[in-house]
Length: 382
DNA sequence: TCGAGTTTACT
DNA sequence: GTAAACTCG
Image 1 (tube, helix red, strand yellow):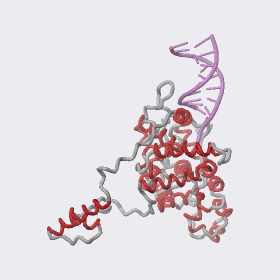
Image 2: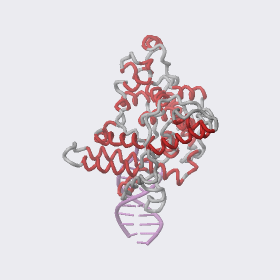
Image 3: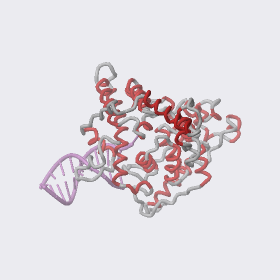
Image 4: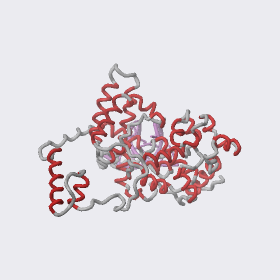
């Protein structure tokens, strides 16, 4: 669900946007619809009615020679209507990850909590994964547990407060930065709507095509969080443990898979699709294609994140890394950020169970530049 | 009013 | 490098 449907915001020439910043300008200027009113109580069963219905089901089962009624509702329902399918019956494994709370009540609590304080420092804090300064609304929005109109309306109230004397001078731009995140969802939604082929194909065509390295062992190490690059491994392990990953870290692990491992972004997209509780085709595809330099938004330079620099900048004390990579818990942050430069002996002394880097970043960086040059039909040696 | 050339900005 | 707005004749 979006505030503005995919046809509503177009360039002055009538085309769908492919550059976010222009899209944002129009999106933010446009009037937003109010949240739909909640449905009236009448016609919805109250708790007592529901309990009575479950009891009645149990009675029916008993009459047919089924089990007694004084069981937990799920068992009573099972007895009455037969066996309800489990995840196993449906062909899914039990999830390994701890999933957060669900439902509209939890979503509203989270929204209120976020807009009460954190949003006023959102721009300054949101890139530091250890600080938990993001909204964590993605899964709720994805499943419609809360509507984007309700969320947006609440940000407008926060904006009014940000513009009052009660908050620092820079508060409005902090709130706006969060509103931009809502606009990003809608930008990628309209990219997908107008270009459905991007689910499997590159948005941006390369003249020759990209020849991915696609080394299965490297991709497997990335998925396990055993690349020897601490911030990458922390992110991949957070994904497994929580079915979630901080957004800054998503960009880092995506750059690492595509530019350091030279693996097709679709491997990453498929893995995220499998593991992320907030997986959304439009958003994840947009993010992955952006990381792989096959997506929207013309870039003035070729983007390759340096995983050490990113770790140092956004997790300076290695708090996030240590939370998710227990092998590194006893180490000084400085040593963690120098992991790629340590000798085998130093590594064995510091953290014997944590792997050495599986690739050399500067080598792979050069290789990536050459690979994309060839994809453009250019000679990498020039 | 339109196309060509110019400017601007890029999660 | 390139999309999209802006400027101008």
